[in-house]
Length: 125
Image (cartoon, rainbow, N blue to C red):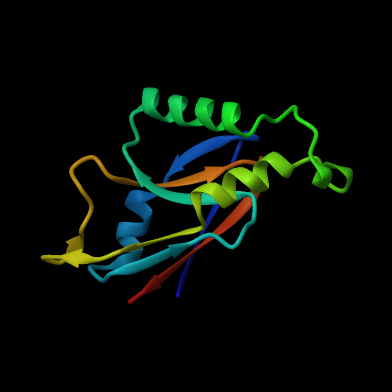
């Protein structure tokens, strides 16, 4: 298993990790997994307007300023809920020696409780 380490710079942000994952995959199918409960991994287009739309939608769906029971312990319940909705892993097959991503698909790491140092596990299959 390979470990990709990244440093996020904002509380909420999207980091395109596609190129790094492809390099680590070495032509094999991979499971891309984040062990952090306030982050997510998704496949989608990395167009800047779409990413803003996605983050704005998640803010409307799970507002950061709302009351949440968990905030009595840590002020990050919204981050946990958003990560739970999106999920913590993606499985990407290989076709003709390359990750079988669609034309616009990118592997995106979503941070909801940064800035932090994060690990992403890449398991070749």
